Length: 313
Image 1 (cartoon, rainbow, N blue to C red):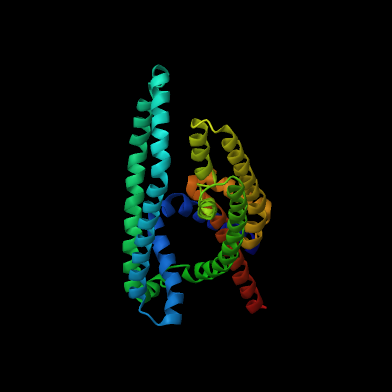
Image 2 (tube, rainbow, N blue to C red):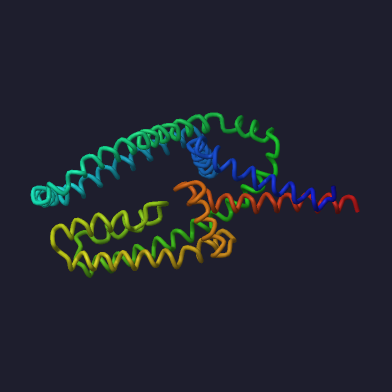
């Protein structure tokens, strides 16, 4: 077997291994992988502050829980008044079209029966994530010593370091898109005389940056509520604002995020679509990450081969 043929087989093995890992292993170990990345980020804080890593982990968990509680409280507080105003309207529509809407309770109960196990699984995943942060922070050095004893630890570590460098550029690009969307919403909400428009604009930008959600998470329920209140003019303007923010992300995301990750915009778009098809909602991240990991591992393989050839010469 020639050296080139062996290289092709090794690249194919890397491609298959990355696919199987992302397809079957990642959903099982996702809370642990996220906690490992979190503690790895906390180590940079530890180097600058000299605070024990376990103490930083505890502070992070407390901050996480505090921000989660504040977000839930703000969400309930902000949605309470619209829900109170919407309830009489829904009751009026229900009494008017009750004979045509009898299918809703059955459909809703079926949806809840499907969604409830997923919600409980997500809550358990969050619990595992927070618990794993404590355990990783407590035994970080021992875990790293054990990790580097695994086969292929060195090339995977080198690939991950290059991916982290790309991830910083990706984060900068994501922040730029989020800032542009927030500015668009600020102008739009101001012109539409929306109360507390800066808060809603920032919230829309933050939600738009989240995977799966997008600005539609804010605009679709809002447009529905306004339409049920028969304020069709406001519903139309909100729909146009949603279209502007959606087009902004669709046009900027492949260019900015692709450049940040070192991928052509079309390659980044293909990786996202392929990730969605292969891995579901998680594919928004795992698709581009898988492409990057394959690229870096292939590059590591070629560099090792060239070094061996150079030594033989």
